[in-house]
Image (cartoon, rainbow, N blue to C red):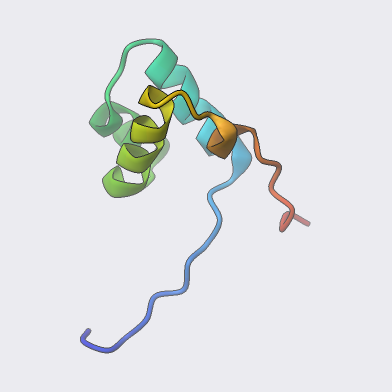
Length: 66
């Protein structure tokens, strides 16, 4: 798959909020990723932001939903 670009898709807000709830409950990114079906790497980035005190990633409304 060299040279092939993957199209980025926006994670639905309900999945982001679900991740936030797992983090607040003391769970790690691997647990949250397995429960939500999201990439471990995406959820790991969310956890890093959460630990830094930034939860804007979870609160953003999904403007692309129909």
